[in-house]
Length: 250
Image (tube, rainbow, N blue to C red; front, side, top):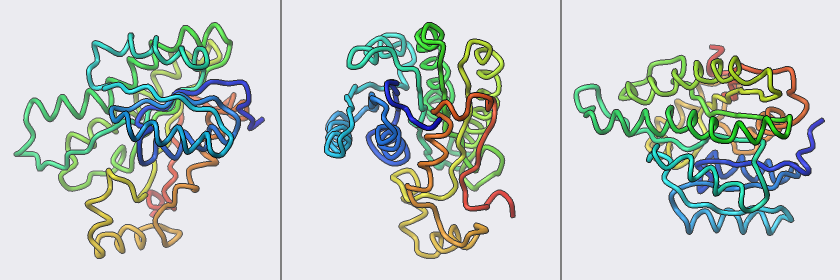
């Protein structure tokens, strides 16, 4: 029920942070993984790390914020191992701008990468999933999908949209054997959350704000990611799973 052997996964944002960790977890569960992000050197390093653990991974450098190129990117993702039937949309940006500083360009940058790219990439891969009779789309939401944080207006709008996008994907495609769910991580130390963890006071606040009493470690995402990619989650769709140590429960 939890084996991904014989299945191909594509993970965006896989050069660092949550995307890189999730790509490794899927490979450990048996998937052949295609890693997607802008930074080619970091992608190659992530692929080599998976290979060193006995997995199979391939790197495909692409800028998913260029929405007009996504169909071509999707076609490239099939080259290493065949058509992906698992898609994890982990690429994202958080510019942390106050409302008065948000420009048309920064708004578009945030919404295009965080919200539009997951839809267009998923839509491009859905035909392969339908042909296989199996599909798993896992979007990355956020605490800001349901909570307002300072300097998070554009980011929060995009991540609130991810939750509704996930429901809409489920409605559109689940009848074809393709589930769509989201993981909403709490506080994890990544490049995106570096402003939090570079400040000891803010890092302590993040840990103390959870019910468990600590910030997340990457291994805390493994179970949720593999479950939502695996046959075990066949009757789960349109849902957002908060992996946040109980932050959202308080």
